[in-house]
Image (cartoon, rainbow, N blue to C red):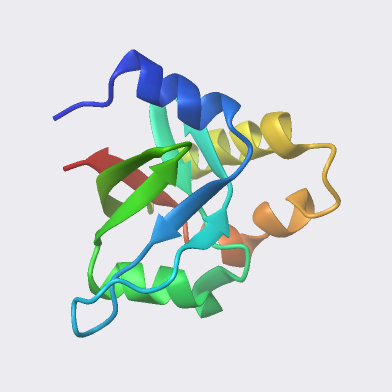
Length: 122
């Protein structure tokens, strides 16, 4: 599966999203507001709290969750990103999209960069 142009545009333009990460029992937990960006046509998420972020820890244990974009609920699979070039492209995307926010520096920290997840449709 691939993202539609409209879905990629939503990720690129909308400022906040809700991520739904399953718990260890597979049951969904309450949605958490996150920022998402698009780099090279691919949506990415990061944890503001780095590896300590609860939704991030759950998503790493069970990478199949969902992202709520507007009124649509999109099932996703999250893949961790280790490639430094991709992480730098994601840094640039966060800087462009959220640069006026006082929280953007936290999203660009080494701790947050290590939590970069590529969103794949499922």
